[in-house]
Length: 447
View: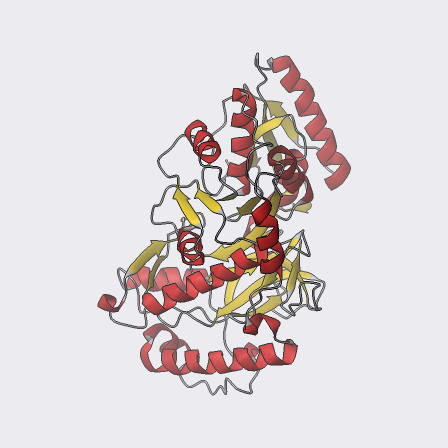
């Protein structure tokens, strides 16, 4: 807590105990609430949503009593094909187009972008989910929150921005600005909270170091990060917290699903699932069978507050490890240890080793001399090779390529020690690799 904002300490204590009625439910109460909301969703979509009406045709399902596993999965490819075949919004939209007043689309990182529509009620639901994220982080109406991203069609932090304004916090948009300009903006306005991706949090760290800007003594006390793994990963999280002198709070969500995960103040290094608004399952991605608590698998979510474009048993592709025990924060919501640890479909086969890019990124990001990096995969699919480009942090006088060579050796050895194979690692000049404002796209597959 920054000494220049003593009032925030009082608010932080108050907000730590402000948990909504639904968040105080025990497991049995959560399940009853989920069943009530699922019943309402099923009645609406079976009557009015052509995509799900066809999907559930002739299927007998009692939402109050039957296991949700009796329903089929929904996949992203299904939704993409529905919209391709029924332009522009598919049969997935429950209501006539003029019933909606919000449009967003996915980033397209896994193929054709999905177009998403929200009406007033479902957008209120989005912001309500984000209010849980904000409250759990200790955000309050004394905060000044900056959103350093371009407000385009990707949903990004749109709902977070509106949730913050409803909370009464000052919300500062920061689209269309350079990183240098954003840093000045943050300092000039005594910003206390930043909402961004982990990648962009580190980009601001590097820019501040290059320009001699002291961000550790700023008013910033929280960074709420989302959009990619990293917020719950020790090495990345530690570097961000150390440089900013602030706490990192992880969050997870998806354009087609909603803002489904948050980190509470009492339990860093993972995220709760908002089970009052989502039904969560974890399955083996190959067998599609459920996995026991504490074992890794693919997260499957059903959202319960977006009947206009719902997802029911949606395979998110996110790799998680869920446990269900009461948290010190008082909630019984399921806990994803380490947050989202990677994407199931991102797994790489390198020299016979199954490796998630997030595991490699965590090792590289732990090295404070790395400014940016890129992973290039090439081969025949069975004995692929991995080549990593590492860009050293530029000092006041720049860093010679010779220093980069030493850095490359260090990165290669660190990966070998942790993951039991040594990739090709080559240095590149400072400023060579692309920078990212939203989700980083560091994995490149080449012939």
